[in-house]
Amino acid sequence: MLNAAVRKSTQEDRGLCLVNDIPSHGSKNREKFEDIIGQSVKMQEIFTLVEKVAESDSTIIINGESGTGKGLIARAIHKNSDRKDKPFITINCGAIPENLLESELFGHVRGAFTGATSSKPGKFELANKGSVFLDEIGDMSANLQVKILRVLEEREFEQVGGSKTITADVRIIAATHRDLEKLVQEGSFREDLFYRLNVIPIEIPSLRERKPDIPLLVSHFLKGFNLKNGKDVQGVTNDAMIIIKGHSWPGNVRELKNLVERLVVLKGEGEIDLLDLPEKLKRKGGHSELPSMEISEDGISLNTAVTDFEKALILESLQKTNWVKNQAAKLLRLNRTTLVEKIKRHHLQPSHT
Image (cartoon, rainbow, N blue to C red; front, side, top):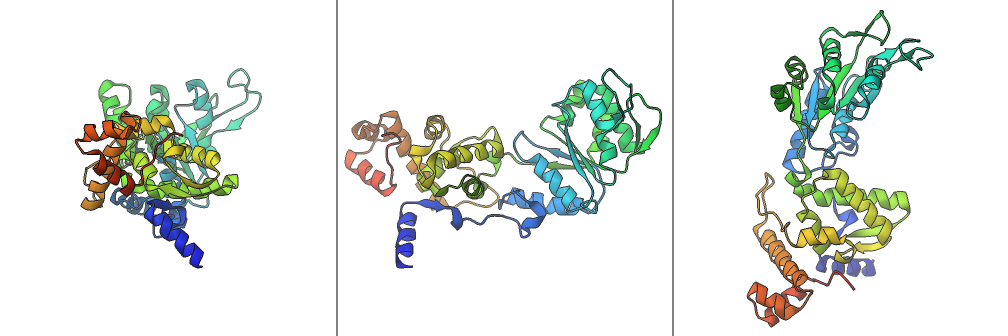
């Protein structure tokens, strides 16, 4: 017990963000939201909204950049609805050619086209009394938009090559990373379909808009990939976390998840430090991606922000000068002794051996 206490104290002194020190989930009820992780105000608002809209049967449109977790939100809506025990079927409208997408959605009869040797039900028929998630609906052709509009308005359709009308008792949840209003103005997306989909819009924030959630997400992914790969990575040092939080994350949560998987597999055990981060990430983190000084809805600790910013500036100067302290001190307009003291205080080390 004493050794464990000493070990934890040492890790805290070094600024180590431990896997088990971070709550695994920001929601009161993990069962409701599966792998949607977040304690920020923006994500708590999303959780509340999901609970409310799940109780209805209204059409939902989820807007957000690629990698933000739109599919997880759609699944959470279904799981918390009265349709939870019925099918939840996903189809990516942007990943399937138009001539195949129609058959996937509505099914086809035998002989409807070359290769149709037997009849096949579509996603709407298979999802009867459940939910259909139309991902990337902004990429759907004008022809199919008309047919989706009919399903929304009349709850019926015909299979490709068929004449029998089939009733569709499904809830439609759509998602897109594109600006549908702009597409409507450009004439590439039907205005009537837009308004029919836009009954309850849900805006998913990008990862750079919810940076307080990054340590929480990293902890969650570390646990998962440790278990999956039989590894024992214990956490992330504060120095490494500053770089991680400073990245702009254009690929959002998906990009962060991929990074953590890579780090767990390559590190294996111990804690992730600056040495372990990809050079590209360190270059960006040390130069163009200094810690954000924006005040989020969660507020900000001034002392922590000042400390993090100082540490990031010192690290940037050291990286620019290949850790030649005299040169780094000149860049920061400090004397060398003061710089060395700050390097020790922030536990900074070269990122290469």
